[in-house]
Image (cartoon, rainbow, N blue to C red; front, side, top):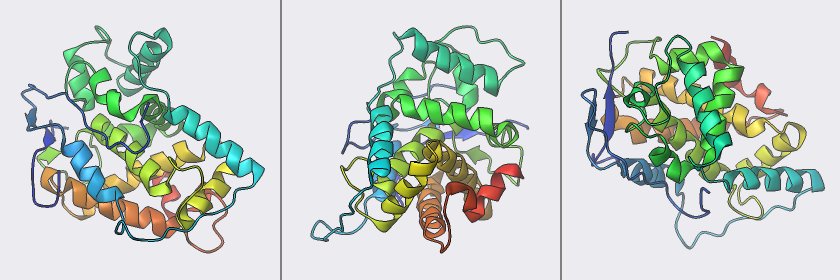
Length: 270
């Protein structure tokens, strides 16, 4: 979705190997009674607007890395290179684990099931959404669910705040956040090309879970921005832009030495 409107996938609220350089586009559409679906390409179009900064002629700085920073970046890039593959048992089990964490009271009837739409996937087979985000986007969701279960459930079930009638789809928004962070931090490059990216690699060198932790902060912050802007599906891209700007500001705050020092980290315990 772009700022002028365009195609979208919105979820109606019920009563209570990312290839480097590519933009995420999903080929799936939803026929659910709870979803209004145009082309699923709003995911990629919206995020290309969020993530691309400056003009082609801009000169970008380059930063030398310490051995620890280089090692951390390479480990993270290795994770980014893993595509979600539904034929791999480990990937299937990870997806089933996500369901158990999200809906412990409800048995999943199959790896392909209409039930997945309850979590905000676009169709009955989440693999079509993971196709662009890669396995790391599933790992991010699992980390969020395990590390901050109350916050995860609040966002999944839209339990906090005055919600829009047409809400963002939780799981698909999560994939968008993974993609946005990769772009914001310049993680596809051999070396960081911004001070924000270089600062993050310092955090990563002392905490290998820094990316997953930043993901949790970004998801909660995005939802807070969504609520403060009284947003609906037409404003999703605007909310993502605002979220990115806030994250960049917080990473650059003086005396911040780790992800846990970011002001918005406290939102995860609310």
